[in-house]
Image (cartoon, rainbow, N blue to C red; front, side, top):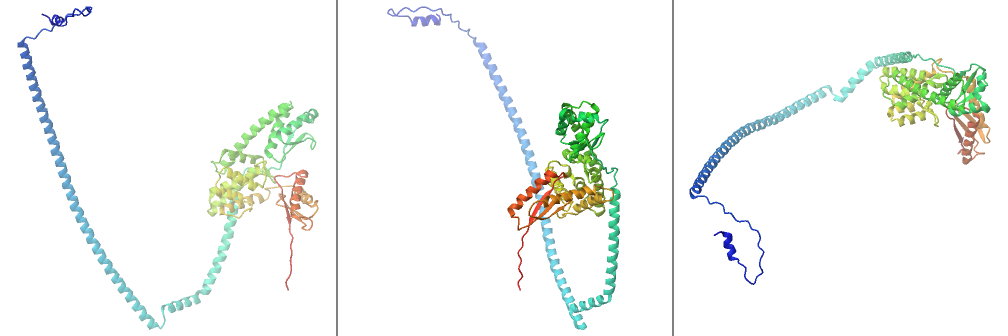
Length: 507
């Protein structure tokens, strides 16, 4: 009877219970039972395999144990070897310490012995000196003085004669050396540049061109002067136009632009602006190349490009008729030669000479060219020793180094040599006289003096007629009148001085 039938018989439904729907149930198929002989064979086989596994595990454990014992013995041997080496080192160290202790003992003994010997020698020396003093009936100091007096008495005349001869010889050699140094410096300062005494002018093919330059109701000339900030003078000389401006770069831009306009023939405001812009670009390129050429000519290669551009303006700048490129190149070569002769810092002198007049070509800034130049160099972080050379090259400040003195000397030689500079003496006197006359026109002025080549006017006020507050107003009025009535390069400083004194004599 199957298991399903048996369970079905046990759980038969009662009569009172509701009939249960029969579900389809798969018939249970029991696994076939393994015959007993086969089961016994499987058990025997499993027991044999387990014995083999146990034997293999024991063999593997024995191998592991043997490897561990071998490593243990190796480690023990290494520890023993290191311990033996350490023992040897300790023995050697102990021997060295013993040897050092013995040396220290011997040194201490020698020091004590040498100190005793030294003391014995000093005592012996002192005894000999005492015996000598008793024999000579004078002390050591007295004997020294006697010897010195005798020597001085014998050789005083000879010494004086030698000193005098040495001083005269040194003076002669110094004069000759100084003369040779200056001559050699001036020889090295020879340049290929020639000082130019010209003004900016443009030749015209005929006078009819002047009418086209002026334009209808003067519109062309007004547009040209506005674009270039340069004054045109067409009435001074027939067949040419004269350009007037204290800014040499603007004047050169205007000259180039006007030459191109005259060659083109189409002169009108739009063309004027175009040619002025084109000329400005060309002049900027030319100035940079000229600045680079000047720097390379004196051996300077590491200046900022903006500073090289500023140095290029020297090409169009003249100081008392001397071209600034010629003056700078000449002065720098002289300064380098002087520095090499006297052993000064050549690089400092080189840059000091190259940059000493950079303030002369900075437009639209107030102050002397020395102050302007110092401010520009500080802007570009030039070393202080070079800035000092620039600040002191006109003795506006005390000299702080030999390099500053050499820059001053080279500048003076280049500017003062015959033929280097030129200026109309009559015009120079007229400018100074007019400055003094403008100041004297005001009430309360006792005296006025134009100094520093017309860069300063010192006005002496009458203290009885002017108060301190009125002095300030007076200085401003003189400044305004100078700006209105005069044309001048650079700046003019007006200094009003008022002094009152009270004195009494005690009897």
